[in-house]
Image (cartoon, rainbow, N blue to C red; front, top):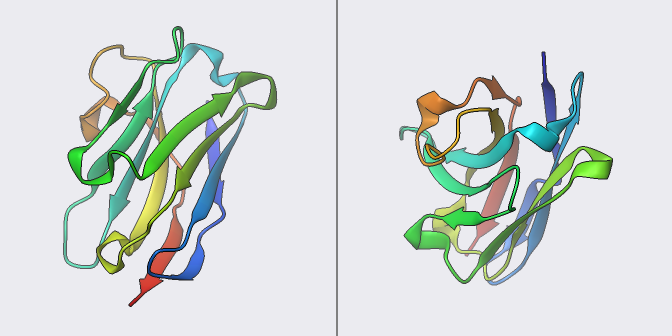
Length: 124
């Protein structure tokens, strides 16, 4: 069993930055791919970024490319999401997730473990 806890969300002005963290317990994350998703009010949860467990390859959705960086420190069992140049449309609850299924990083149903989410609010 993997337990994920996100932190680092908050209120920021447009153009600002935030770094989200996802700390895992219960099992090492070293054999899991990790993803970040977000869900805005009234919308479905959508993929933001993912990082593979072995090579550390990263994957991003188009609307965050160039503004967001996902990284992981396996020794700390932690995954990060650095978000820069934030926009009001980035406002959402951000969720961390873990999957042991390779290659399906963009798909919500591939992830078996989820955190409780952290709120990110970007003011204009």
